[in-house]
Amino acid sequence: MASFSLTILLQNLEKHHKFLVAFSGGLDSTVLLHGLLSLRDQNHLKLNIRAIHTHEKLIHRQENWAKDADQRLSHCQSQCEQWKVPLEVVKMEVDPRGKGIEAAARTVRYQIFLNALKKDEVLLTGHHQNDQCETVLLALKRGSGPAGLSGMPLAMPLGQSQLLRPQLSFSRHSLQLYAIEKGILWMEDKDNQNDRFDRNFLRRHILPLLTGRWPYFLECTSRSAALCAEQETLLDELLSEQLCQLQSQAGTLSITGLAACSEVKRNALLRRWLDTKKVLMPSRDQLTRLWKEVALAKSDAQPYLQCGEYQIRRFREHLYLLKSNNQSQSCPSIFSMKWPFTPESENTLVLPDHLGELKCTPYRSEGQVIRVPKKNEVISIRFRLTGNIKILGRDRSRHSKKLWQELGIPPWERKRIPLLYFNETLIAAAEVFVTQKGEAKQGEPHCYLEWVKS
Image (tube, rainbow, N blue to C red; front, side, top):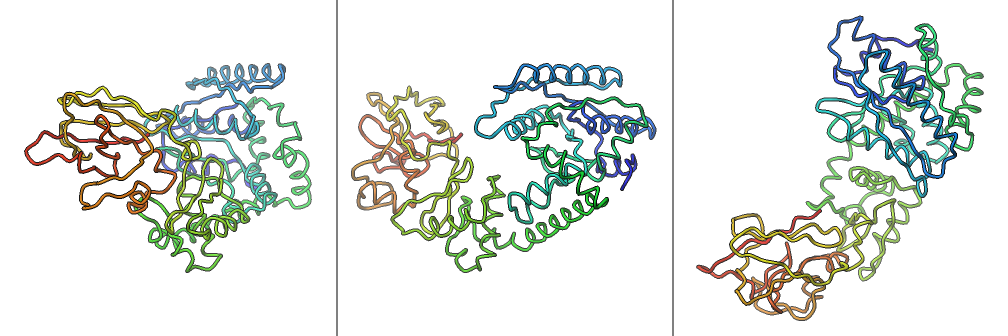
């Protein structure tokens, strides 16, 4: 069993020198902070070290839990003052309903860390070998594949920065021995004694049995996780070119191209497509449903699969990924809105239902070229295209439904495209078309319409 080593800790820092340490006051983060300070002082390294502590208030918690949180905060402040480490304290309130306490707190906590990072800083967490083993065992319980069994990586992207776990090769026991040797005090989180959390149950009852029978179980599990991660990296390299070929410029995925693959390869491509878009990874059963019920659905059907906060839909032999909170199935709550409009200056209108904003300017831009409204024309934005429409570049008018089909606009997008009207005359559908009555004829005043999506 490897002892805690400042040399290995330094290697795992990957030549970074500005650090934000997630500091809970527990054993792992306390040893990490002490180790960094020792590296800086003993090796005369120019390390910039800050700590951050999330002072948590979880809704529906008992009062004694809040007292424990206050004690941890006091301990962290005292420790950082003694070690002369700048400490940032951020209060966080977490509602566990829906995701559960652990998942909800983790999401809020990492967003706080991301917001706190300064330029060139990387986030450090104290995760160790026991945490890695617990993660792999939890993945086994869920029936995860190689991606889940890869566990936690030593380094991973975090926004524009990185998250490093430099203690991942050390066991908790080795951290404890180091802390005792150096006379370091730490606080135990009383929540770690609560067996209703799966991770705590593994930590308190299962891992002691496994390591008691097989002393090298932690190291072997870490090695297996590393091998799974290698296989996933290899698959990424082998499939990246084909995945790129199967995607359109808009990021949709070709069903025809997927149909030519074996089921195993198709599932691997689907997982990677979803992973690039940060979607909660679906189970094997969900992938089967995605293919049979969505991809292979009849052309006139509009099925979808819900994956966490996202929906996967099909249109014209392509799979589309939509965020559920964009209310993509509904028409905006405001069906018609007037636009105070000055042709000689830049005009901006905020759209309803998270649709972004429209801009119209007399200056050249990437937007659609349209004629300038007349003085007696009232400008408005509406939704839901109806009737026959005659657009630029076409000799004949088309009914709105046929027009949307010919232009390749998916059904769920049609009701959410802003339509620009001058009085009762349709001028343009933002980003899609300009009507013949909206044409800016040569030599006549014109302006540029642009849709900036949120």
